[in-house]
Length: 381
Image 1 (spheres, rainbow, N blue to C red):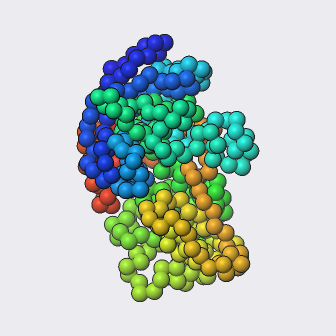
Image 2: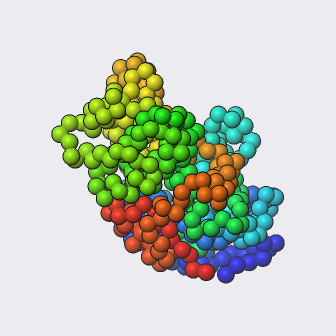
Image 3: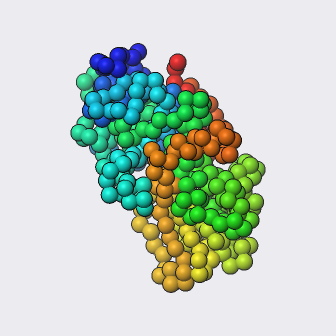
């Protein structure tokens, strides 16, 4: 159901609620409040499952912010707008943003950062504006995830945490650009700024890692080495530009030594896309002396501290972090949508499964078992 954008009311709809860490999601009738000032309410059309959703769902570290509605990689249509919102109107097609852009803070105006001081990554399960929630079940508040919570037929986000996109772009495809694919392309283009003819090594060939490979291929990298323990990814990776596939289980020596041997002393660029801080060290060691650049994109599941020998840096290597590939989300993501419409970047090939929203637990199982890149969940029409 929906409501008038001039006088929006509470909406009752279906949402997949996680009542505890690692527990199967339960389809519940939830109440979604009207958008508060500077917020919009979105009818979610499609949402895809990202590895970080699974990691946060499994984590016992945030047990106090359950029950919770996960999901952040999504596309939808604006259903209603709150007071003060001028950039959106009912019917606009949008992507949700797990990290927003206020356009006015020091970081947003610097031209050097996409880490908004006002609408940055939200970790406490509430809205940026009032630290409250917009979901409830029988009067019980339900916590948010990344201030998006797209595993619901309707959701409320701050207007700075959504971006208007072309109405001709297929929402069931471009939802991937609200996180994973954009993160990988940006890491290759904006963060690393890969040069033509260079050598690249990528640790982890999930959606993000393969998006890095696509970005490196489009930049003209001469050799793109993919490292993954799943041999089934070898053929699929070639579609995105991987020229050499390495399975660490096939070698008796540390994988960084293998990479250095086959790249004549180390790669120009290395990317850690697993979420394992031990692999950050391996990525650093796999890059070459003098100018080797290692970029970390993964969200660590355990042991968030990074350890590396100082000599790696004395010899000229650099380690950089990357959030959403360095893109300013509201400013830059529409450009990626346009690139997709011009067939300049691949998105469709990342989608290995299309499932109904009711099959969300199956999507979680596929992700946990390493049997998918992206599962796109389609909401009831």
